[in-house]
Amino acid sequence: MASAISRRIKSSIEALQKKKYEESLLNCFPALDKTAKRRSPNKKVGERFRNFIKDQWRIIAPIGLGTLMGEGCTFGGMAYEDAIYNLARNHLVHEGEFSCNMRFTSKKYSVVGGDWALSENNIFALILAVITAKENEGLSLSPDIQLILFGEKTSVNMLWGKEDEICTKIESHFLNKR
View: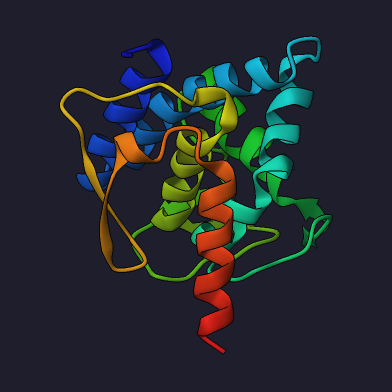
């Protein structure tokens, strides 16, 4: 079923494919906000946004930062979810641009803490976290979009709500790399 979330995610993916990072996140953040509200309807926006990123960390860290990472990590004194919320989302939504110490790049690596330079994989990770959230099971894109995940083409419509399955696939991928 098409919804505001699936429409925003489709636009976010299309913008990311064109390396239009602001446009991608302008579409991703409302989808993330709405998904987080479905998960935690009684929490305020900042708390539920940050909690959603923490909840989806098993997807976001390996896809965005390229490593399995425990919870509670800080970088230069700031947690990842705080950086995304304060330096990217709030600045973009309220100021029309990212904070001066947050940028996104097509490079394959990220610099975290202090001045944040996040690879485009971080945007992909946020998109994937929204798509696979259990709350979004049953959503769909029309027409469907194919994503490359661990070198394999994957239908977005096959990923909606598949949080546990994608976490298992991520863990397997990283454990097999050792």
